[in-house]
Length: 359
Image (cartoon, rainbow, N blue to C red; front, side, top):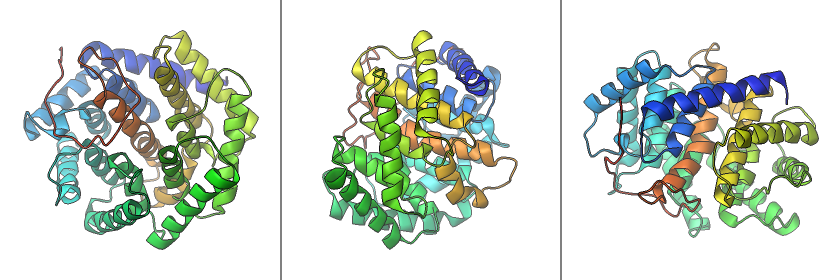
């Protein structure tokens, strides 16, 4: 493991521990995700600032609010990284209102999508972005009704943010699904492959070549006999294909991060915990190798609000689109004791204000 990745992993552990120690939520996996958000921005967790942002969030939202349910710590972390926390939450609320129009139930995935738009400074384009998002979701649902659900929302917002036409995006997604399932015969489920197709369709280029790069990386990881690459740990590999290194080198970095997280007892040892650990290891490795989010940054950083914030913005986008939907699906399936499930079936939900906070 490179020194840069080691430092990244150690920062993540400090951030996760600091947040978990002060935000005693039932949905404890979100403190892990929040720690990763701060790590992606190369920031140490400032607990005082996070608590102040929580107070601002509470002032600007109702008690029974989608903003104060499962995504609270993600929002608080985004607010803490912004220049103006109060303006940030107001912008997110305004964009969410546009996304939510016509929907009966509150939806935490739409909050994440609103964060993506605001993190790129694209609030002024929200109407057009939402229109393109709705078109893509409608057409995806028509093509694949059994595997298109709320968990797709934040990925599809990324696609809507891109300059790629809807027809080109959907064509690439269909070719990716066809190639992986029928030609490569990958064992991953159709919903997993659809998530991967959404990530790979973000940028131009030969979609089959991008699929092959994911498979080579997956094979390199599997050859270690240490991890099993399936589910969201497989689809998340799509964010690493822009890194200019051999698959074996990238796999070695991922496995180094995986062992670090295992040694620090971050996540348990059942199958879902192992998949979550691998996914977090993938992103930590990605952040330390070049931009860490080249698939995303190539498409969107030119539209970001400043060059200085480009790397931070790219990391935030990758975390919100790749990690938080998985985490949100896991916590929505948790029981009251905090046990986490990897099953995330149609998590569109009415919101609640559950969670114990400790100052």
